[in-house]
Length: 63
Image 1 (cartoon, helix red, strand yellow):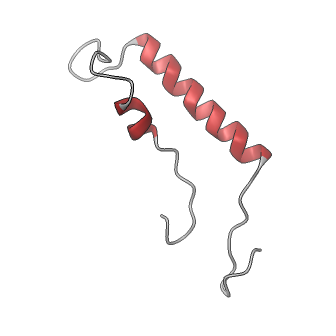
Image 2: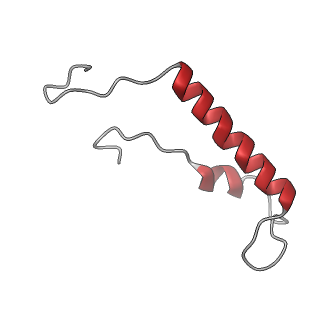
């Protein structure tokens, strides 16, 4: 992904930093955690839409 300059929302790192008590069972997140994840994704997308990063062309220049 990095090689092709595809933006990544690192939800894994964000969620891991929320602590250990984040599951309501062995696989599903608590509602509060889901809301925080949604806010993180929405904030990331808002920033990306407001300040998009140009993709480099084949010669390395911005397109």
